Amino acid sequence: MAMKIRVTAKNYRQEVLEARIPVLVEFFADWCGKCAMMEDVVDLVAANCGGVLKVCQIEIEDSADLAEQFQVEIVPTFVIFKNGEPVSAASGVLNRQLVLDMVMDEAGLEIQG
Image 1 (cartoon, one colour):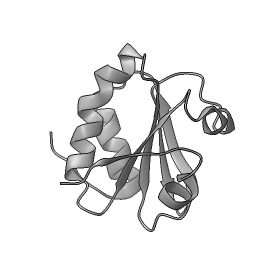
Image 2: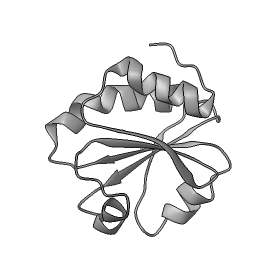
Image 3: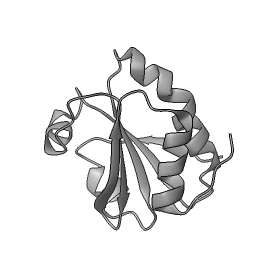
């Protein structure tokens, strides 16, 4: 079963920019109740990505520089990267299907659930 990868400035280049597969990044905060509400969707994607998509999480207070770089003002914020470039983003508490559609549209991965 695939897992979520905690990303900081130290491993951002390796895990996101240099990834050979698309990456779903969730910018979140440990104190954020809305982020906790989205955790089951993030877990669902991570559990079903099958080597086709990497799931990473960036805590905005631990990695304020990355949050600032992507102008994250609302958590959670989801960004899909392909070939090191952001290609899709959405913020806030999202409908489960919207997240799954983002993954399907941008990463070509279909997840049921």
